Amino acid sequence: MNSDMLKFDESTHTYTYDGRKLISVTQFLSRFFAAFDGPRIARKVVLNPNSKYHGRDPDELVAEWEANGQQARELGTLLHNNIQQHLVDGDVSGERSDEFEHFESFIADKPWRPLMVEEQVCCPELGIAGTVDAVFEDRDGAIIICDWKRAKKMKFDNRWQKARPPIEHLDDCDLSKYSLQLSLYRHLLRERIGERSVSLRLVNFTDRHNEIPIREHHDEVQALLQTGTSG
Image (cartoon, rainbow, N blue to C red; front, side):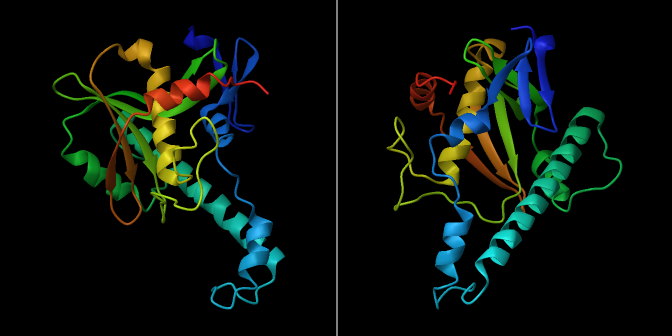
């Protein structure tokens, strides 16, 4: 892969390689989980007398959720930019995310050297690309691949709903999605990392830093990629 041929259009969140459009890791994985149906859920909760949304106008509720989602994305981008600037430049100028101090606390005692920060990776043959938040190397030469989050709530299981085939044995929850995302990044970085020891870390910076070691889903990633990335 020639990294100079990989381009990312931030306005459309589109990756291209040598002019050919690639699917993003996030878009690819979303095929295997149920989409959030805001209007349907809003109509349901406003009729539930035990819900805090009882009696609300469902359209207003959907608009409120969408506005909150947009704000969360903007604040997430600010945090990612702060972390990137810190790891690359050693300091942060301009506006700081409220959660950045939790990152500083997290990284302070880590004997890690940053190898890649907001690194765009792809496999042209598979037609897939993504951006890895950070890749570190520890004192022993082991690799740590990190994914930064600022989620107020994170769902670790779901006894009511499973993912779609071929990973229907996994719960439809945040932990499954983020674990697969990190595992897929690990797959895309395989040639660059080699056979060194690799660990995957999900780190959530809301209120404090919550570091979650992630099990690599190697077999699941292989099964997903065999379904193809087109269409």
